[in-house]
Length: 574
Image (cartoon, rainbow, N blue to C red; front, side, top):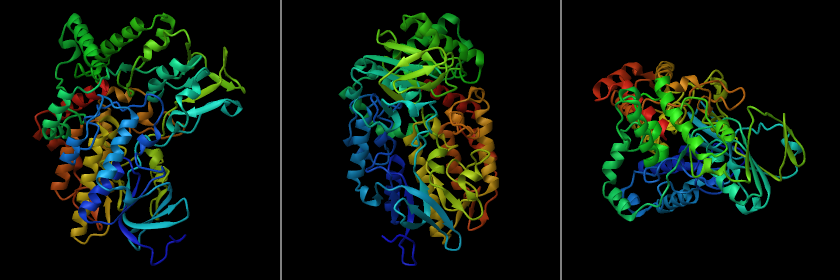
């Protein structure tokens, strides 16, 4: 491969970044259409997020029987998940199986990072620059780089002073045995911290958990998949998948219609208790329809859960420090196994960085305002630069709009979470302002790739070379996503959902929470009407996306508000 593009540089139909769930399905669909495809992955193999996230206890918080592809019936029948929530290694094994079964690896170049993506308007082509210096050109560029794949910058004071072992959950490169007998610190109690803390506590001489913000940690209630359950699901998979496609959360959702104060205090507590024992992570927050709309209703669920923390954790001072102080579900709830029970171990202690901020580190200790903690190893569980981080890392640029990060300097602006005005022939698979943030993301990925490839196929059939979101269509979609989220308690709380965990990141809610099914119906109606909001070679159908949203709501059994309530109930629960 030459170092620079020449007139003889091959031009493919589709360029794609990422070889996780998104990239593999994009390769499959491109081949199905007969298009040439070139994918690029910085890891040495397929897997995406599940290649990198190998920290102890890593699991997905969507049940594996649904967190999997639905596009091939034989694939569904031949693969059997071992547990309700399969571990990282099993998810990665599944992704490898898919890559092998459909011979998808040959479409990707591994150990390859895309450093720039430039639109060439005169040629109607995207040109990628790779970290080797090589160039690749293609007609369409798909970003399958994932929403949680770029670790946020380390923001731990004095870390450079520490001389012991330092490892990040997002790029785990040691064995759990390497922490055995050591004094270990874990900084961060989001999903990865919650999952690894109980396992580290079992091998460490002492574990000190440095908590920034306490989260709601629901019990996973994980268990092996009984053979008879597996057989029943496989026999009904087509119907189950169709239900998932039009459900609020991309999983078979239990319908929720009544509100928290529709029942007596005693009945409400009974139902919370039953939900907690029945399904833990998927239970309490999904018990009533108004829990993320009505602060007082939410408080009934939040107080119930805070009470559970005090029941489990024997030291009441520690239990109080572990209490979340924001509405239940307004930030991403975590799921874990024996998380709160871990704080009953004699070798585990908790430091609240809100009460005792971390000031610096020495060669062998972490120093806070009021204390010093000697440690041999530090585990950083500090999270990701969600959604925009992976996209900005590609340095996507057009002559008219500049870099994507400059175009979005005041906040994310997309059309359906898949396109953005000013960036022709560029598509984001399950991108920001899609349902990916608050759904079974694999279902959203499939729907996103299907819609994108259908649009490309129609454009090619008509001889149209340039496809682009209109400003009007984009404005409509941004307004819809903001109006939808502003109905909820999400709007009251800072979190990575809004980019609040990254200094200087503009505040934009990163997802659409109107429901997977409602979103799918909108996308289908847009396609049926000839893609309003999309310019095809400069020509566009009038936008009117807001009206389509209203018409879709009117044509479905539930009102738009009820669909949002149902989706939120699902998200709060899981």
